[in-house]
Amino acid sequence: MASSCHEEPSSSEPSPETTISDIKIEHEPPDSRLSELGIRSWPKWGCPPGKFPLKFDAEETCYFLKGKVRAYMSGSSEYVEFGAGDLVVIPKGLRCTWEVSIAVDKHYKFDCS
Image 1 (cartoon, rainbow, N blue to C red):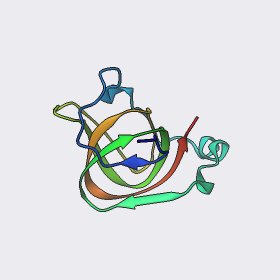
Image 2 (spheres, one colour; image 1 turned 90 degrees about the vertical axis):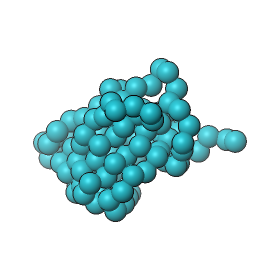
Image 3 (cartoon, helix red, strand yellow; image 1 turned 120 degrees about the vertical axis):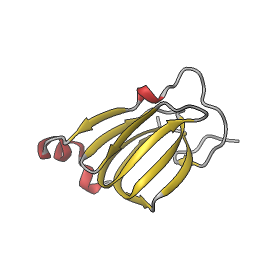
């Protein structure tokens, strides 16, 4: 199957070279940083509370307008938490489960290179 540039539900185990700690979180970045990245022109995506297994086929940078998420590695209790006001970079190849406690609304951009 060809790799695509979007999040896909997945139940597979994570690859050993990618860990949950590879997710980069910038809490409350200044408006100047958001403007520099052009975040307000990026597409928006949202989801209700629930659990969502995801596989990232490309690096994703996203800015959370609303919500709260715990991202767990498959089969692990290790997690990172992020949400409203956070700028998050998720590495290509990461497989995790998002446990969404507050509905998400975010701007996102994939680096498909």
